[in-house]
Image 1: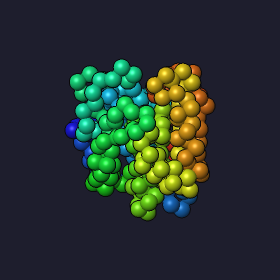
Image 2: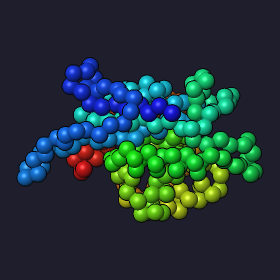
Image 3: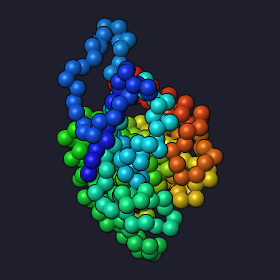
Image 4: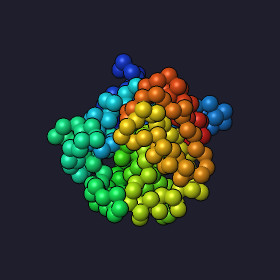
Length: 251
């Protein structure tokens, strides 16, 4: 799958440019360690939602990312490997819609398939193209990142130092739920969360259930009035900008 990355460029309209592969910079910015005035910008892995792909998530997250352009030098958009069947209750981006896992429709015995391979796919990308400062996910992408954070805690790994969760939820499959609840409750990784009060796909209480799994360093953005989307309200943009500015200062 194609990977889409966005890097800072002073010559572009929004101080960013897009490339099709992740590349490492040949030179590093000079940092004045004696005064600690200059800080390197952040590199963030972006994980799309169910039925989306890297291109569509880049487009739909444009407003919130522009708010943080002074803190982030690269947005790396990775794509899932599973094809997402169209569902009545999800917005699918046509023939190119992808998924991090597939599931049955049983409420009594929910079974998700493919999530183990997706976790390995994410880990391989992080290790091959890192280091990454943080990760950002929307909807199912936020949930697979919660599972990835649980995996990082379990292994004692250091793939990323913060997480952004937009419209996320706690998976219904017991083994996935238990791993997230058990391993994320004591994490010291800072996390930022956003959800909509009018979301009919992932209701607010489902996002709040996921938020409760993170016991420390949790920033919850004021809930926006919209639905299942990456909100561009002023409150969301300011909260997102502030969170990433702090991550940059602490880098």
